[in-house]
Length: 296
Image 1 (cartoon, helix red, strand yellow):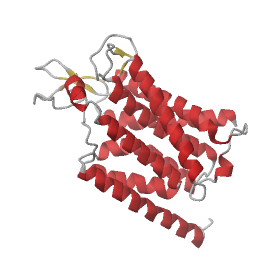
Image 2: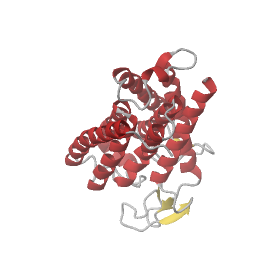
Image 3: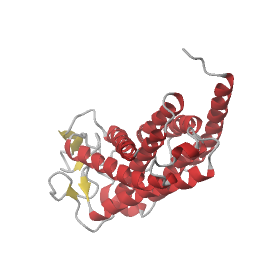
Image 4: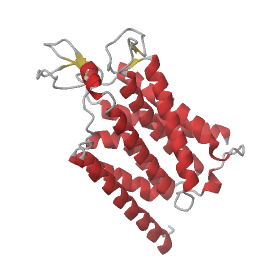
């Protein structure tokens, strides 16, 4: 078994330290501004340090871009969204440990695998797909819930209330595409600025067809759409959904906003929204990686 060189270890430690300092600062500010709980801040440091350390500066900046964009969007017309769908969602805009791991956990695992096990361009494609999915899903939720169009269940097209798991609208779908594409654009910018610290050199990241990094845009778009739609599919079928016996409202909460314990209506009891988001990010990663391999 080959032992890692001293230089390899020192570079990794330096990158992990950089990640710890940067994500620690961002997490502290987010905690002070009530964008993260204490547990969420700890999770952000863990995930961010791993992505910065194993993926490099561009990968870490992509994570921060997702967090900043999603946090800002969660406060857009916040009062209106609270009135429309707050009772539907298991958790609010202040992200806890579970939400942070659900949104960034797959990316951290991919970054570690890319650095330690398989430093090939397809791993960047997978990472972009994972981040595109969580961003696309966030945009779909935060913007789609404001649609004037009645949401319809993705499986049966039956009308559902705004914020219902598995419900989709035209506006939400457009937001999904925009969220995925935004990650692709951000990835292009950050990778163009960062060559030395990446887990894979920029020269190795050129598309097989000679399109340089332009392939990141369709990969982010398609991967983000696929992952987000898979999220909706799980929400409409096997995600745990509850009902309030007093208000007769569907919700993801085990304790309804009225204070009444809810009863499980459908889905697997263990499959909550955090696990759905994590699963969807893996699907987005696989779709994006698959697109890369098909083009190679």
